[in-house]
Length: 173
Length: 346
Image 1 (cartoon, chains in turn blue, cyan):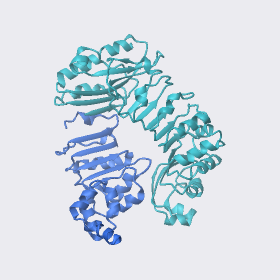
Image 2: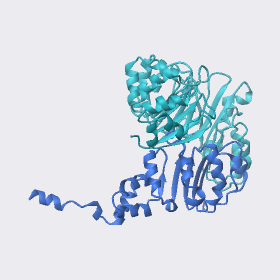
Image 3: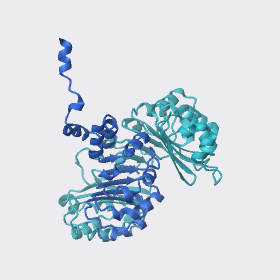
Image 4: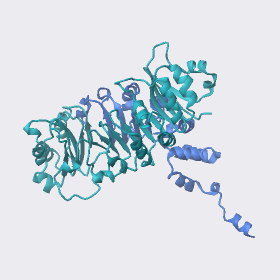
């Protein structure tokens, strides 16, 4: 009798409606949500593909990074953080080689690329003007001479880590 | 808005640029160019009252060179930030840290300290000058990285109770006892002039349960473990350190020799996931490091011996060892520096 009662009390996570699953995912980082749920079944896979759109790749393991980008849905992403730090050297270039910015992530609202190497930075700065949906931008390290005149109308939050060429600062934002 | 300067003279642009920002309510300025002349509280008062009337929050940190000029006299510099405008109208209080040496770097900053990185330029915080006697606590809550440039005998207690997770010791000589009270440290960097005995090193390692990252030259590592013979120190390093950076030591040598590398690999191969080092040739990378450090997730290496026919490429690595064909990794070359990022090993 005891065993039967115990069985009735279990709710399978799959029985939960989509809204609750997404609510659970909202407490996880985009990366963790994708890695945890997308491999389980088709339903969870399409949920994560459609709704997980915030990705912070700072200090991530390469295995997780490769798995997330394998989903191939960068066109849905809203928020992205990349970093070339000691834990993830050359991450930015690796990402750019796989997903050239001008074809894949121009819809981004929040973009943060920190610790960029100079060659990557110069490629990136020329494409900055194409990110017309940006609300928040954080970039570094970028040469002041290569920052173009930005007319990003939705931009509310900017962090620019630049060098001694400060001429771009005087242009009206 | 937050602005940071690192070259002397860069700050000249700010007073003219700020004229256009009349709606600004919050401004943070960090001027790290130590060659600067002392900051002038009067000029700031003028700029703020004329151009930024809505400014409520003004966080700043100015590094400057204190020399024999009268204009560098600390009391005079501080008094310009202690006018009624600062004290009564805006309630902006400052602290000025300076060294007893006449020609030295000094620092003037608003309280509470607003930035994540604080440099210690004073020999004793007891000598610091503040423009307010009774400030509330938690003045250094924001500080995550502490760089100690000089021998500071008397450290600030508030600072020690804070959230410092990253410590850079840049002074010469033995460290003082206050380093053992920072229990939240995750990263420690020991610059070359520091003189730390094995006993002190062990004490430091034992007092930092969260320590994962260590930056130190080969010499420092060797001396602080008594030439790798002190088992307790080596054991602590083995268990704790996940990220190891060995910068090039420009004085005596600029790469880690093979016999020295043996010790590094022996002590650190168990847990080290991230390594940053300079070695002589690519053969050492392929034949020794990659083979003996199975837990590496990222690896940045600079080669002393380098040239067009001595580069590391995926094809060359496979020639050295066929097993590298199945290794999941990305490699990016930047001159003689190679960055490896590994996926799952084995």
